[in-house]
Image (cartoon, rainbow, N blue to C red; front, side):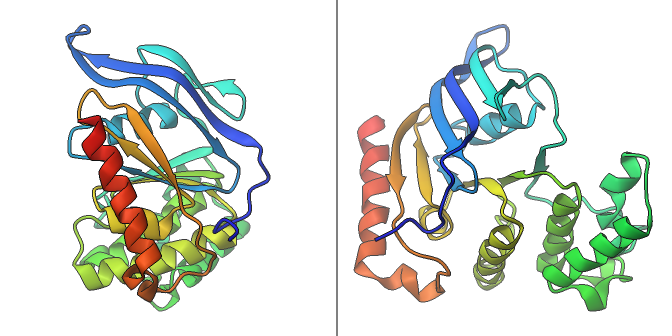
Length: 259
């Protein structure tokens, strides 16, 4: 069976022996991270709390400087943030005094421009995330899931082709989370983005991804990579199948063997 999403094979993120320490080297958060992410892939990072998943994402985003090793995005060494990479966190971090569309337009404002094309794009992104009717609502008027969709639209407004999502739905209830996972797959496919998605949930990781990177407890290493063969689009019922549960078992075996 073919992979969930076709990839051009072009490497857009490359890591070789990436290491990150804190406290003057006394705490090793990530060690010997080696991986390649191809254009258009959806990669899930799964592992226990404190294993370095978020640290790895922040290094790719240029928000943290690696301690050693090689880390490249679009064949350039990562030293600070890049316009080609955008990151979304667990909390939506919307500005309470701004409407949905004003929050989505924030990256454009920071870049020093807000023209008619930017406003049109912001409205199209709210439409894409199912929020056109709430474009002029304030965060206090939105549910938690709707706020996260505004944050997702804001992420896409940056125009970045690499999206980093750090447990964006972790604080939501199971039903809202399942719905937003379906929406996320649809949106990412539509904008043809390369995506790294951090989660603690093995089922969620497999359901969303083309490949799952399994990380060890700290110091975080990539202990194994599980290929996900399911075609897209994917229905939530996929998660009840024997092949899906076999992949869940594969991830658990890698993790248990790496302890």
